[in-house]
Length: 214
Image (cartoon, rainbow, N blue to C red):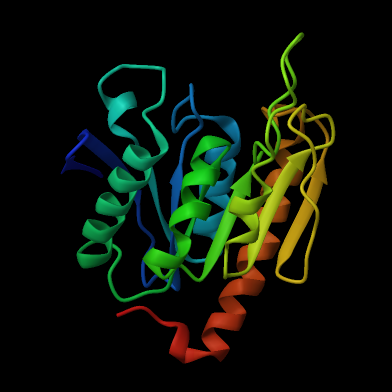
């Protein structure tokens, strides 16, 4: 099922993968130059559905328009928020919301988690610190985006990711898997990590009915 959503920054598109009687929903965004068919997004989608979550994979307007260069952060966040608001009013209504994505999509999810009221954030290959280019100053860390999240967070990161490894905290679980930023060589472990974390989160949500989004 595909849902097209008009935003001030162009047409966005949500690819819906519902399950019967969902316990929660998971909305995932893609990386900067890639799309929703990235292998880690696919295995995360499958793992979530096995745990009883309906899933939506969201294409940002720049990707729907056929461009590879991402829009500015404010435009990404605005389009993402509009898409999710429409999903929560319709296809994903009545259940708790988990947001996430790979790389750039994970950053968008972190920045918008509080405003959307998401009860969890799933980050695949979070781009912590861009690799330093020859002759340039060290890039600024994006750790503050992770630290701003107020809900339980899972980060699945390749052990050889050139963007580095985020630290774990009381509310943030960090799972290292074999591979680099693409996570392609550690997909079995990616799936297992997502499945276990979402399963535990769903159990917590069922035990705490006040978390349910209506």
